[in-house]
Length: 456
Image (cartoon, rainbow, N blue to C red; front, side, top):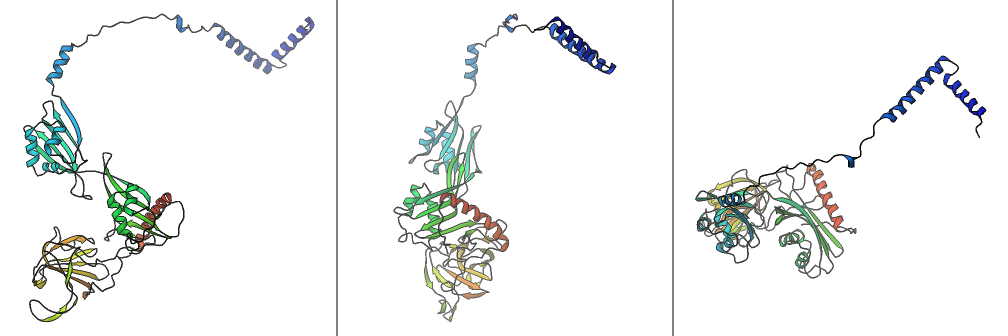
């Protein structure tokens, strides 16, 4: 318990502590006491914020004038109403049935579509294609739009038909498509095409797989149940809709104990066109086709023969392929046009200069392919002209010459080399592409197998 003496003693000590034994101590202690008193005083006199429930509430009311309903209806009736419809072309559709489903009741528009060279392409749309149209309330066509292509790998084009007063106009513009890279794998149970169908792989991709590995695998007899394959290929889309599949970028086929791989490589900075290579960088493509014609027969070989016109015996320094006039002639290999024109007994002739002193000649053409001139780059398989009987010729055929250092060689017996190998500068870029495809194959097939490179 505190006694009076203890309280007085404590007060004395507090006084001594406050006043201190020196002037400096007393000044500091006095300042601290003054600040404390001010703080407690401010807290004691500061007003407290009022409770929100006690605040007065004031209501404000304002009357708004609403538009007349009759005026709104009249405005809608006076304005022209347009309607947009979309339909997919159905098997057996005619222009009339398609326009009817789109809500188009416009004979002038139908007549224009049938007569205009651009607009009439709408009548050739394949089943499944989308067509959009805008019409007014009477069914008159304002515009119609669709996308077409001449072939599977041809560039897509937009056709837009628009009304301009009482007339129509059709324009055709290129389509900007989205490119995607897809990966698929499959297992052989009966046939390759059954496996690709089960894996939802497009037919043209399956055909490319056959072309890639046909020199190593006989797809009619070598396939075994349980064989696996992986494929990386490109697809093209427009507005989120699948358009078509493109090139196979890489393929891997596990046929029994062996695994074959190939990867597509194309160097934009090189005059050499793209091709398929093994993962070691060696080309899988032969540099030259055996025949510049897809379907033909040899009517005269590389030999000494009696000339059908002069009657003299002389060396026939080429191979003649009999074919109907107009049959497409393909470039036997990648190269540059060295000559395209008339040349004595050759008639219309094209000479292509290839790499490493190789060249080929194609004679007696009926006509040349469009835009073919000296210096034009061509790719293997590209059409360069058409079979004819110009020059010293007794009937339609192709005279084909294969030359090494300008010396004619028999294309049927010469050892055709593989395509031009990659240059050292290209190998670095190739390894980057091959590395990416190896990673994709690893994602599709985690297990490690012994790999044997395909050769073509």
